Image 1 (cartoon, rainbow, N blue to C red):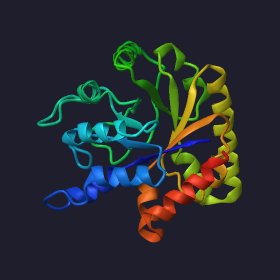
Image 2: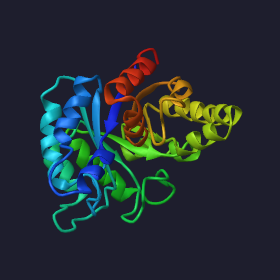
Image 3: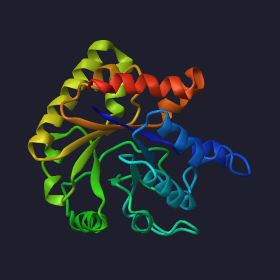
Image 4: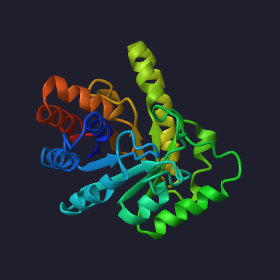
Length: 252
């Protein structure tokens, strides 16, 4: 079975568009869990345009109330303190999430759109991964479907990779054949990563339609879905949307 972790960034973005705390992130995350989500994902950025630093501890505490519910914090390990944002690694130290997903996004990016380039000196990244693992966190690296890059991951000390699936989603939208061709590349890369001893996660632009194919990715352990799930919930309701995802992933 593939774990569904719900990314609640978009819900935080809606909250931040008005004064106050509506929708309440903790209540929304609790609802997701009670409706069948097996994890909650957040991606706090220094500008705090969606998830804020003060959201992290309450969400971590919520997830700790439920057995086998994972709290996953995504972000750039190089993100430093800015105002009330204490820096990404400091948030990790405070919350000690079950999983840390390191992403090479810059402060001005609209969304994550590429994986790590490990072809250079990875000393700093290795130290950041060691820091997270010393806190008891599993560490996943956001990576492209690229064999040359994937073969460098084990030396960093990371436990898993999270495939950036934007290119697959684009190919799926282009045509059925293009989607199948793109999936074949991801499947090959997943098998290769697994042969290196790495766990496999995936996320970005996955939805109820393209997950019908992507759920069969070899050795897939977890998907993180937020943007599409939020839109689908507006159309179908949260309970129905989560039920459909769980049904899709139950036999994956």
